[in-house]
Each structure stands twice: as structure tokens, then as C-alpha cells.
Image (cartoon, rainbow, N blue to C red; front, side, top):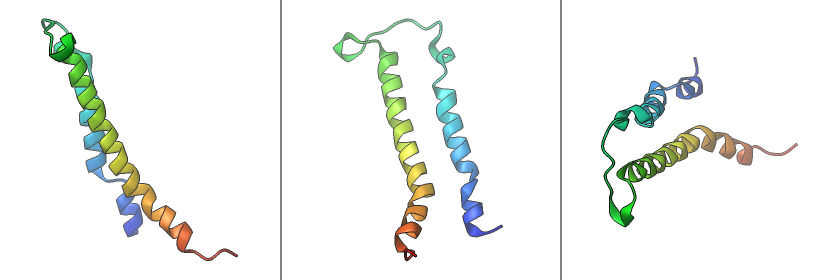
Length: 80
């Protein structure tokens, strides 16, 4: 197995996206009371906005880890 193949299936990414998935389940506050935060919006809206921001950051780093080297390899190779 080459170094590039080892980098393709790290368990860290699986764990990270699994945690984000588990945190996005509604059963965490299913029977909880509705409380309001700033701007008179329910607090769960802020939770999901923060969770989606974290997901976007994780996808950004996932994308740069997997596709950055392939893009650079294409730019460095001479065209025939």
C-alpha cells in the first residue's frame, strides 16, 4: 500500500463526519422545552447554524487534504 493510498482512508475523517452526523440528530432535544435566544429565535436554530458552520469547515479541510495534491500534480506535469 503506497503512502497516497494510506492517506485515502483515514479513520479520523470517518470519525469526524460520524460525530457531526450524530450531533445533527433531532433526538437530542426532542422533548426539551423551547427556549429563546438572541433575536427571539429558538436556541436550537443557533445550534444547527453552528453545527453547519463546523461541517463546512470540516468539508473544506477534507477537500484540501484530498484534492490539493491531485490538482498540483496536474499543473506540474508537462502537456504532451
